[in-house]
Structures are given as structure tokens and as C-alpha cells.
Amino acid sequence: MLKHQLIHPEINAIIGRAGHHSQILIADGNYPASSTLGPNAELVSLNLAPGLVTVAQVLQTLLTAIPIDFINTMGIPDDDPYAGQGDPPVWDEYRRILEQAGSPVKLEPIQKWDFYEAVSSRNLVLTIQTGDQALWANLLLSIGVRQPGE
Image 1 (cartoon, rainbow, N blue to C red):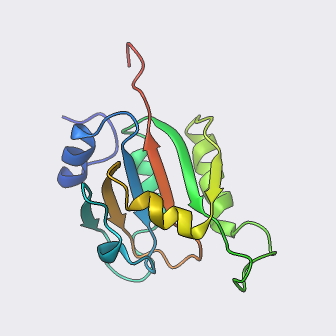
Image 2 (cartoon, rainbow, N blue to C red):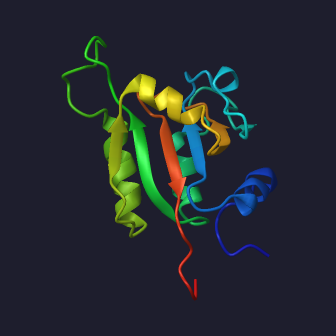
């Protein structure tokens, strides 16, 4: 019987095989998940309908199951209409989730094209496609180390 909140059998199997530095992409509903899948990554589609499920919901659940070393957001290019408007509101929601989980991890934006390159690496083991409609909602998680006694 699992003690954490994550009950999806396929996601549990994938993260159970993953190790330190393995990466997980939680993709929003606009992300081209199938065409940017890394060579070692599996795709799990949770995009039931627009807005279901959200990246924030997946993040909150994954935090109960795995340690996280760092989280990258997709940086907003200067030529994007959203540029210069500050962080997207969804990033504040992620920060609240991290704080509530007691995680010291901070969001670290990386430029859009660097983000795409990172998710196509051999370190990516899982892409979770959501139906999230928030702009700039994609997250790239790096799995941390389980401490002795945990």
C-alpha cells in the first residue's frame, strides 16, 4: 500500500525506476509533448479536458512521492507578448505549493529554447501531459536524493 498521494500505476512505476538527476516534465495543455519526447522518456497523458488536470495538481502530488533537487520553468522570450509583465500568475501558485510542502526548492527559469533542449535529453524519463490552460505553466523537475531514514 502506498503512503504518498500518487496512485497512478504507470507514473509510480516510472518514478520507481528513476534515480538522482532523472527529470520529469509536467507539460501544460499547449506543450507539444509527443514531438519533443526525449529518447528515454515515457509519455503519460492526463489531459482529460481543457483545465483537467493542471500542472499544479500534478506538482503537488509528485512532491509527496519524490525528492526534488531543482525545478525549471520555461523562460519567456523577449519577443513574446507576455514578456516584461513579470512572472506568470501560475508560478506564484507553484511557489505556494512548494512552501506548503516544506520544500526549499526555488523556481529557476531557463530560456524557452534551452528548455526544449533540456526536455529532449536522455535524463528525461517522464513527460506528464496535462490539460492545463495557464500560460507558461510547464515545469521540468530534477529528482533529488532520498535521505537515509526517509
